[in-house]
Length: 92
Image (tube, rainbow, N blue to C red; front, side, top):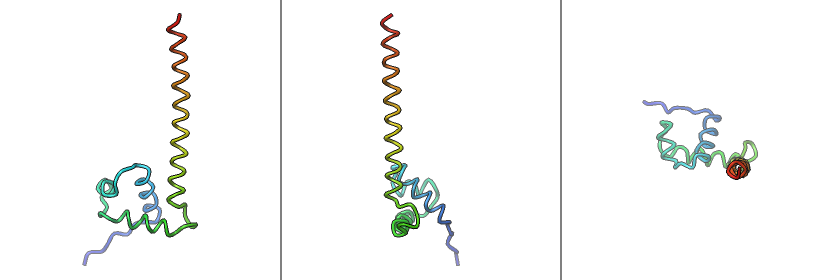
């Protein structure tokens, strides 16, 4: 009889967080990591049900969105600085 592989809660949580942040499909992530198809859906449900014990998936999404918004803002500032620098250089 073949024994099923056991995964740690930390591995499950990190894998689901990767799934959310990557924007890839569950099947693509399963293939990348060599996991059976459908297992990420089950892990995602488990994490959602854990609720307050662990950081919820919504919290993970919100945190990622906030990080990306901050990065976009920084990139816009850098772009504006470079535009001004190029304008000064080009006018001389």
